[in-house]
Amino acid sequence: IHITVMPATLTKEMDVAVIGEGEETIVELFRLYKQKRKFIKKDLKKIKGVAFTERNRLVLTPRRELIEPLNKVPLPARDLITIGNPTYMFTSRGCPYRCTFCASSRFWGRVRFFSAEYMVKEIKYLVENYGINRIDFWDDLFIAHRRRLNDLLLLLKKEKLLGKVSFGCMVRSNLVDEGLAKVLKNWNQLLPGFLST
Image 1 (tube, one colour):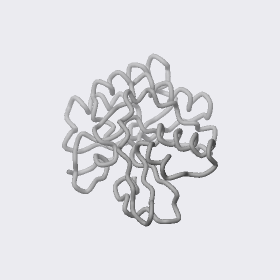
Image 2 (spheres, rainbow, N blue to C red):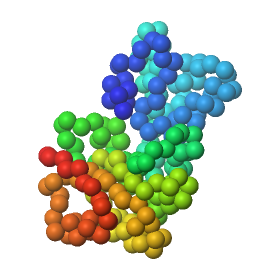
Image 3 (cartoon, helix red, strand yellow):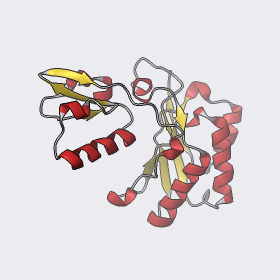
Image 4 (cartoon, rainbow, N blue to C red):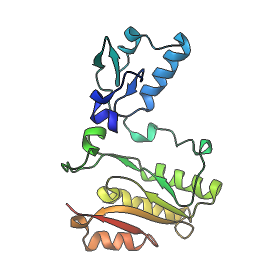
């Protein structure tokens, strides 16, 4: 997030930095490096969503379009890292609010969500392959899309995952009402972290 929000902090020791979502940009950078074995400035200028220096001046290429739908993003390659219990998931990008103290809207643009089906696929993978029994959702505001919460709850029940794993998430206190409380009650051990406005 840092370099996206403050690209002028790019140091001369860094050849190139990715601005914004990186999944598509990094693939282009790897291809370029594999082909040329170094980063040539004129080639970098053709890649959207990067920052680099040229003659001691910061160069920013146009921002890359947001990834849509988010379900295009492959599941994380968790086999490449050590997974702890609890583990963490991001199920959305961005936040519908533009709080002055938060960089989320500047980094992600507008809020977008992975589908409930995508989420259950990842949860099931974590439970079956790693024995995970606690997942914390690290979204900026997990409860922002209530229909998706209901869909997710139904799919977790259908896949018999609800009793096998507990969940935690972030909640804005001003958004909690009786309807949301009823939905969250069905999650079994959901541990909300409350944020003030």
